[in-house]
Image 1 (tube, rainbow, N blue to C red):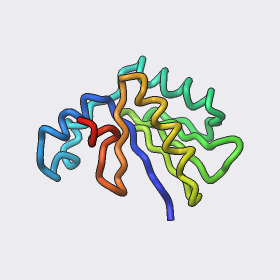
Image 2: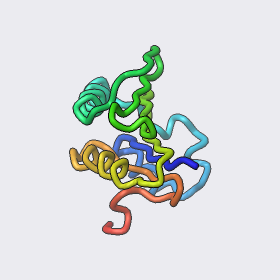
Image 3: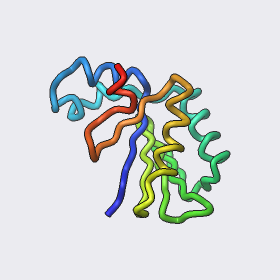
Image 4: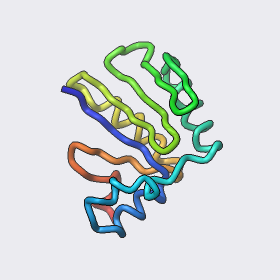
Length: 121
């Protein structure tokens, strides 16, 4: 079983909460693409956190954590997918939360269907 976290532009969270419909995710136009600066920031952050590039195409970059093969990441034009097959999800959650603290991104947990910080708003 895997545990997954998704990161989007913060505007995607705002749109999703205003949309009030499960079909939000079905319309790709709702998921705003990362800007080149966003992608550069995420890529640098992943490398600084010990992730290694394992595959790169025009549409996505795949990463694996150098110290823990159970943790992987995939950066697409619209989403950063973080995943672990380990039962210890703390590190994955904390790594994603660091990016959220920049104020540019929002963390979505598809297991619980919740955004980070949603309860505080």
